[in-house]
Amino acid sequence: MKKKINLPKIKILRYFDQKKIGSIPRIFISSIMLIFFFYSAPEIINYANKNDNEYKNNSKEVLAYTLNKKKAGIEDGVTNLDENDLLIDIFSLNDLEDDSVRLNASTIKQLFEDTNYTLDDVRQKKLVKPVALTLLPNEIKMIENTQKRKEFFIQIILPLILKENNNIKLDRIRLFSIINKSNNSSLEKKWLDKKYKQYGVPSKDLTILKIRMDEIPVSLAIAQAAKETGWGTSRFAQEGNALFGQWTWSGEGLKPKDSDKNEGHKVMRFNVLQASVRAYQRNLNTHSSYRAFRSARAQLRDKGKPLDSLILAKYLDEYAQTGDQYVEVLQKIIKQNNLKDFDDAKLLPSSIELESLI
Image (cartoon, rainbow, N blue to C red; front, side):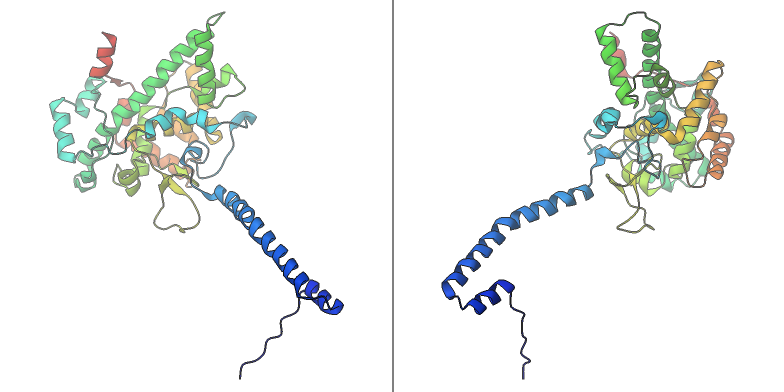
């Protein structure tokens, strides 16, 4: 026997019962309620969808200020930055076609041989061939000889690091030329405005811009890339061109295997290796966590001393959760692999760059 369920009457219907009002008013009131429900339902759904938008991925809002494993702010009290301005040149690199051909290790080795590109030659002559690769070869992790694998990895990333340093060096030369002028042209002012945005200096303080717009020692960049990727063998490097283990909470990235699926960070992925190098340099040059790093670099500049990677590495304790231990590892990598040999290396111009000069 089914148990009878007594549902409580709606107050307004109970009122009609008490007043002994007929069925027509009941039908009228019911119709009004149905019309109200169907009219308001789309608005309620739209409101829910709007609130849900904040959880959607947006890879262009994550690079510089969510990379350092925490959503830190910007130094010197700077706020209200537009990340599209800050990272537009990185976006332009990262938006390149993502169907780049991945050369295998043997093809790359042959390319290096054909161009006479060896690290011994670089150490001796301080000249680097402009061999720009977009992707790491999968076979790099199969190179059993540790020393050969390390040298192969350095050969791949060295031209990329030098290229980004050259871009900064040219910008720095132009900046000092502008600073030393009493009057600047409209073109120079537009260029300055662009660089203020690019380096996160809305206050338009030339002193801050000068400190931020500077190179990263080559040996330090190589050491960090080696540490973060296991000399190019990590899944993040292979699948996402992530050379420096930069983190993101909301953008395009690769999830660490041991992390919770619904929480935590991802490792930022890039379409080309060059974008990863540029994002790394922009991170060190703008993020508040590395203010001490930039200050120490500026002091070396003021004293006319070279940018010593062993000194500057001391100020990167916040790059990894291991802190001082991370610094010690970087210094060990630099020393054991004689990476400072590459600090004064020069990148030879490519054929395209030579043609542009003719």
